[in-house]
Image 1 (cartoon, helix red, strand yellow):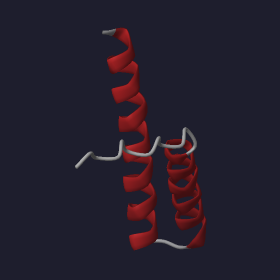
Image 2 (tube, helix red, strand yellow):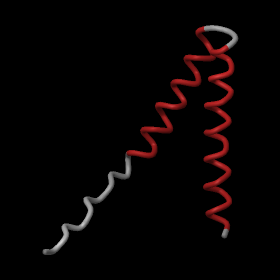
Image 3 (cartoon, rainbow, N blue to C red):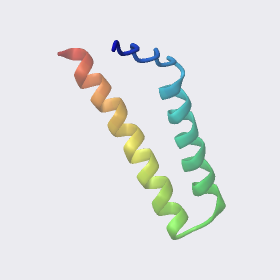
Length: 60
């Protein structure tokens, strides 16, 4: 039995998730206070961490 190679991943998956997270953070920051502010801070902290991770990985 031979195995099928995995299907190639689309190069648009990661940018789509980043865009969706950005929209979620922006909308939650604009909609309300309290929990909504915490969600927006958490989302943007994760996005900043992703940028820093990519930057560090690129300089190695």
